[in-house]
Image (cartoon, rainbow, N blue to C red; front, side, top):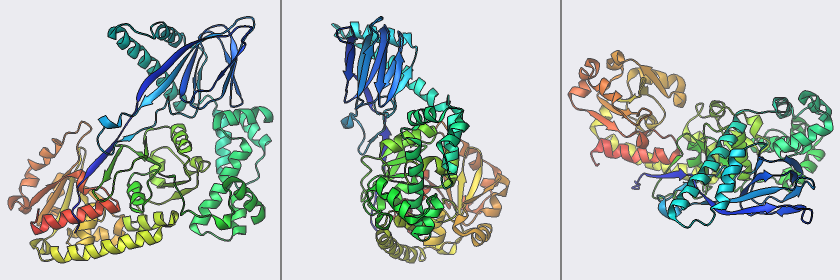
Length: 551
């Protein structure tokens, strides 16, 4: 059995830097400025009027207007001849500071400096005032002034981030959103621009303009992406002939599908291959481990903790971006587009928890749904491997692991634990659980063949690997307690596990034979709960050490 160590690769936000600040004056002799910055920049209008054109979008500027320009933007700034423009331009950069971060640390995307979308605020005089002060003191003579500049700079960034969050949280175009949702849910039907415009309450020509401003694609491009990506999903699943797939996604025949498919991907559907995929997103963190095991680092993962388990025989991901589970749909889509994601692997149950729907994400990339609770980790691995055309890698790894399982079972079956009933008790702040066939339960009861409590056996016989756990009251402990008890305490939101002490001090606990005989093992949640191939393999080694006394 290989010896492995548990490590953590945490993610961090980058540090913002003010690269430079400039004062721009437009006059009748110089009515237009061209702005082409490699980094994101902020433009604040101190006086005058004008227009800003970027990516076929035009913004009317007046005193107090502020606009964030994404990196690599090509911008034209035109002044009013009557009221010439005076603006401040702040170029915003980031420093990743990898040397100061822990090994394997991952830097998260900057919303201001790394975003794809512009942010226009028609009237933000406080930001203009702060920008003016920054410009006046751009060359500080003393460190006190330098620190004041830093505070001003971060006050500006805080204001922008708060406005971005507000923009994501509430949409000012609910009618447009309804039309987009209709397209996402009915893309396989005949849809006209006039039909969508009527839903949005605007003219067809204006609808196309608004649609592109909101999504970055024309309605036709958006619809084509939905259909081609759905075709890819059906090809991955082997669902029918090319003609059948064409009809399912809304095309008249396979020839039209092939034409659209080739326009978008550069290859015909018959030549669609996933073995060269480079940018795959997993919208469930355990699936990141499955992909890493298959030799493919995820481009994006969605998670609540921003942590990733790695081992000594598998380096931590170097470029994977984390999206927090509480991010809005628009934030998630922005990161996925920015990462040029080619395939999204997700579990419908978790998408719903995150407030996401496959239909919303399909315009970015094909969505392969792999159920989390309806199958075990081995089936997860096989289906993910099939989606990325690495089935042989998965089967080779599983074959090696199953050999390790046989060796581990042989060792543990010679230990006292082989004749005992083993209970897995999980103590959470709000309840007690007895674990079943998943997490560490898989290793104990499936890999090692140890005996669970009778009531757990009954549930496992009915539900198999779908049986996660059963909630109990403290008074029911005796009904589930075996000869040996493994305890895992989950911390509360402040990181404390003091709530477990209430269970340990209760008469129900103290009266258990395993407690009296000191056959209780308190296990670390992070080492024994994760449910993915890498973690299961780690747990197998720990379980052998625990039951054979070799740790």
